[in-house]
Image 1: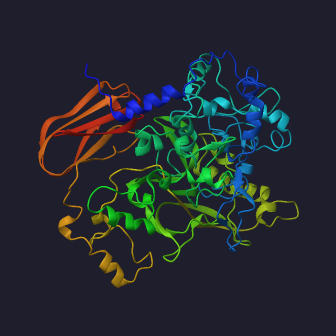
Image 2: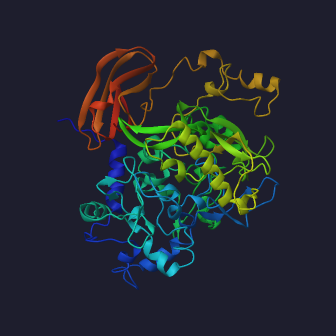
Image 3: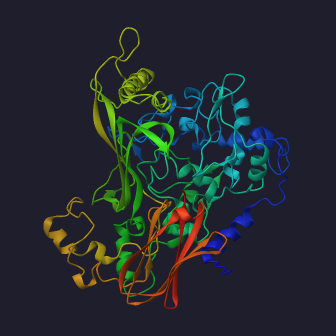
Length: 582
């Protein structure tokens, strides 16, 4: 059998092997940090209670944090105030965390609201957490971050499944821990440093679903992961606080850390402010650094959700099986980002980047729009009480669901009236009028870095993707910028051997693999599994002309998992990763 060991796979294997705690014993029972404290207490390696208490001071626990470079709609600087999603409205879920947290959700087959990913079912519930830290630390789920594989009820908590809340014998909503055979598998993958897979099980699904918020998956779409870097390679930690310094309108809360650690979380830390060194165009490309962010060229596409209609209820099905009621969603095939000037400061209330030609750089953004209710009296957007919609039975009619959406709006307004100033009647109910409006959210795609990104021709020909006029350039300036590269050098004349990302990814059914050739020649295209074993040869030594070509195959014939596809052309070969999820 032919075995393939791509450099990326080897690097990932070596790093994973180095981070595993090979001597950690198999766990027979687990109930959060309290179980870890049985062995890890006092001076024995580390104190699990002390570590858990550290976590309770971080964004990952509180959902609040340092408001670096964040402003409100009146231009007030919020850097000295704690900000976060606990009471901040976000159009992606159409609500706020405080009224959709675990203690306010419901049992069933729907993930536990804003709690489904978080590191403790006591995290932000004032009754269980903030008011009783001596008890809350015990519920910190160490394994959720420190195990590469995390299984509950026989399901991997990642792309294939999510934790479902339930009511325990004391009448409290809680999240399940791994047990039995699931715990054996989970404890066998314990790591000293959280793996990228552990981070991804939450961060690839924030905003309500896979790639909803960022539009990209680090494990699938990013060159850095292929080169063996984990999240903590850039996002360094100190006392469980995690560095995040790149400006992003969608990230309004972060851990406060020293400037040295924050500086490590930047492109410049590894690549300097003159990242290009090869070729005659290096000086020209480096000159772009002053006004163009690295991601503008090197994150050329994103995918994910683009529109969410909270006024339109829909049934979510898995094949013929009913899953839940939800809202109408629109998704994009991989598409170009929106480009805007950004000086690193954010309009906190409207989740928008601030900046201009005078003080910013051009950044790429994923624009997500939500059709949401707005109170006519205050002009504030109304958070929905989401469980009233998600928990509805399959037998509900469209009319039933429209009534429940209205009830969820009025309940949400009542519960957040103090925060947002919604008018209530004499009985404390919201009976005022609301209207439907579009709300925009601008986020930095991030984590989709490719080596060969935009070319000069992508921006500086007549078919430029860059909206120069929208960026504030005059008509004459825009015409000049679009004429810097001749049409002979345009996108229709490929000069590089390149391999595109599979589409769709994750693959289900018919999947397309694309490659670009600088000249005609023989091509072989092969798929390998994650162990390097050949699974399928799609093209063998076939002649193709110069240009871009698509090869389609039926991914439903493959088992779910991670695969590599490799294209060979002459003496060169390129490989990429794809996920199959049937």
